[in-house]
Length: 176
Image: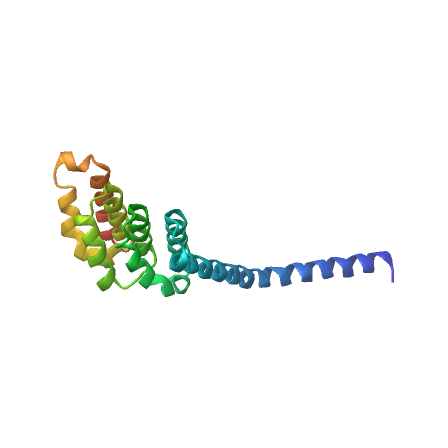
């Protein structure tokens, strides 16, 4: 073989290997995300560390936005975390639960309960953000969110601004 032919064959081999790697990459990434989700679910179910549990809830929320089935097995754990004594865990659960496209008939009332009666403002803000993440599926929460931003004084609070943002997301038109 002459030098130019060997060069062409080598180039084609490198190109073929690159194409193979590109086709295998999504499968490898999906497998990695699935392992991550399983690890976070395990942390939710076994850890007593509030920081680790809150991080697991956050990460599952992000994974659930990418691919809902990654977070679906943890929905009962999210619902349980909404009642946890630690405010950091309740807040993480509230915000993340809105991100994973869980059943609004179950999630909206649970988030409204936190929004209206939790003693921690950060939890209330997270509940508003969770409702906002649900978009128009959280329409039943509109009245409660509107009440939180009714007056100028309330609108200036972090909770009032979170409620306004949630209202915008819930009432967004499909073409916006």
